[in-house]
Image (cartoon, helix red, strand yellow):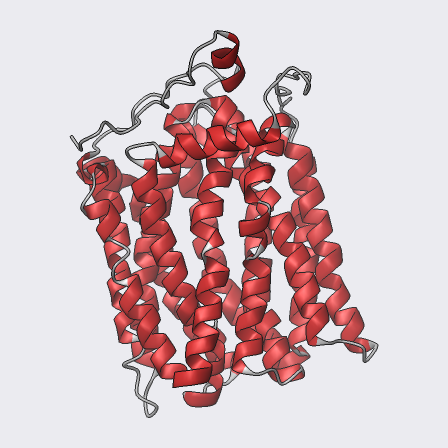
Length: 442
């Protein structure tokens, strides 16, 4: 049983370890997010399509392994998965500067490391979002997610600028090494979490539901839920078209706008002020206007990305900063609210599969968007690719604006329904998940 600690999560030792681990990892990841494609662009002189393909490879695991990962996360303790994923990513990323110094680095190694890091990231992300509800009480979920998102926004503020400095001063491979070290430190802080994690109930696989049955139960829960399916549609639209843009944005910034790595990092850092502000106002905004309206407001901010393809070569920086700052303002408002809502309404035994299905849907489209971005840039030019992505991102608000999501005010309580095995043992059908949509919208 999780006790409600006075003073909130500031006095929750285990949450503080989780928060510290995530903060360190986020800063390092922001460095690598800029440094890794710059290794391809500056060190290996890759083409726009090759750089876009790197994004495809990094996110392909969200299509290939998300669903079975959710089943395993529901079967196993989450903390060991988090630690192993962090340490594994540290080793993989460290191989890039080592290969560069040995004169053996190739684009194929970048692809291989990107794919393997992506697999570990799938397991980490599914476990991480499923672990928080078992670490803190339900009424602290929004506070916990808000604090974690403040760290993410702070990392976005510091990381790109740090990456630009490291790339210009020490080269892109050294910047990737910083990320490797950050994952090592993150794993050590996660290892310090002391709260005993209750082991999932073990069932005999011969008698219990199969992997396929458990995956299908997770799919039915999310896709049949009157709120979750629309949140998934909105997030997937945003992610697909944002990666049409950002799969080629660094090439666009370097080769068409003439920006140096240090300037690009500074632009990202300044733009991230919007993200930090969004993380700070998300909780009071949702409390004031309601859960659904806050989700809609957050999604609507993506319309600002239309400013990016309008950036002139003579003075592009104000346009790029404004586009990213406004969109960045909306991302934490949207994410903190909808992730907390998902965690609050989902039964404990389905947390892993709910998160894995959401990841499968909303992150599985990322490599597809990257492929489209690379193809559009190759065939029609970089600015055209940016235009298509920005126009598509402006549509991301529609699924939540035109669905029952906009009517949500408070977070409902979760409902524990029978498992697949229980329903089958009773000779009946598996019941519709809590909140499943009726034949017509309310």
